[in-house]
Figure 1 (cartoon, one colour):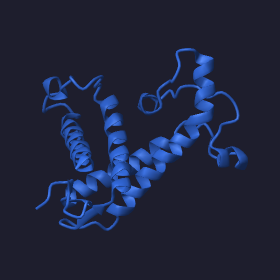
Figure 2 (cartoon, rainbow, N blue to C red):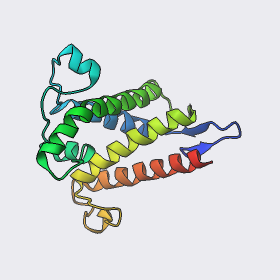
Figure 3 (cartoon, helix red, strand yellow):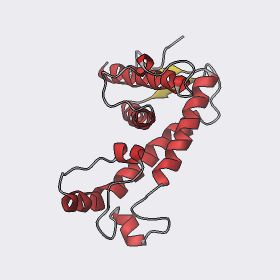
Length: 184
């Protein structure tokens, strides 16, 4: 049985999941889509031109939600420059992250244990981005600041977040498998 993910002889990137793994990914991706709708610079009913261009009307402040702030960090120290840069980039970046999550969800829709997931290189890059975004959000919740932080050292089995640490590590393995498969 393949481990998600490996490159096959044809150059496609293939893998399989258990029902539980596929269910966890679907759950996390659905949550990610809801998160991306929070504090959207275009609002819930954007101006059609602004939506088409992917540009907000005025300067955009850094999101208050720490998970969103991790997904969309400031590009500049100066608040005015950062706000202007966000105005020009964040709506489009959000839509790209939504599209990636939806694409992975579409592949997992109706997935049954043992089904083969087969991706070309571009699809694998989309998966890589979507899975990594989920991992970044979980890192905020688990208070992980850098790659050297091992949350298993400070989050014990009696902590409600303990199972999330295991999921965080599994997502890290998925990212690693995807990168290795993309590198051939």
